[in-house]
Image (tube, rainbow, N blue to C red; front, top):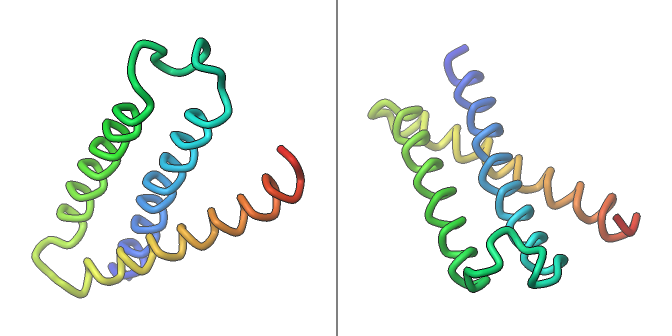
Length: 100
């Protein structure tokens, strides 16, 4: 039962990380420079700050989830990997083929 909860938390963490990555890259590539999130900030710096924020939250939560047990960390990482494949599938079917 505890590994199921860790796996589901890993999926949620993966959706946070990879969904945030997709949103960041989409915002940087689709909007004109004037309508960007922070027009005064260079896109590379925006991408770097997004990475640092996502990675910090992900690592902190993963560390909290594992509670010193490497097997729990492995189960959470498998959940994150599943979330990555789900987001990749969603982007490929909805966004690329659907033209959203």
